[in-house]
Length: 283
Image (cartoon, rainbow, N blue to C red; front, side, top):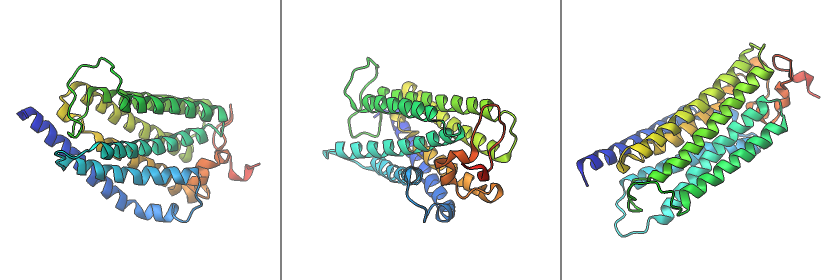
């Protein structure tokens, strides 16, 4: 192994362990919010997605850190890597599901947006799985590392590129809804939903873009450098999707943020109408 490869491999290990430390730290400083606002609630789509996006990345980050420092030797690491990839995908799906629910709620429960985003997300997911798992030759040059090395391949840039594209679509949809339905609204709730949603999607887009660049340009030894940072960004910001909404509950008289996402008619968006409808207007 060359000096450059050694430096890249050590850098990748350090960044992943550092990201794991950030994830654990964030979990404990927000645990009181989870206990207060999530525990004890009825299980539904939103709470299930939140729980998966919260805990699957922790398991994935621990397994990735373990894999980074383990010497496999003659052991078969394929089952472990398959399980690890499955956990990563599960966390991504749950986090993106929360984002889709957020956009759906922001649209005023217009099913057309939900159907289009779910269908598009499913296409992105299936394509990403095929690109990650199927032995397809895309004529992407570059050496292929041994299966148990803590390195990636050039082809792994493609799923990250698809994720970046999906985030761009969600961002554009959110901006469109903001200026179509809430152009004249300056309430703190609308600003919070709009700002937090765009911030989340922008951060995911940037870390995914970074992964594309690292994977496509840098030597293979650097490829796992943003592995855990990617899932940490998903997990941390997905948790705050609900926590930030719940923090505004008393101010805006909403029962809880889970109901706010699952019952978006409480802030119904209507063409030509600014602001958010009062919960007492519920039909």
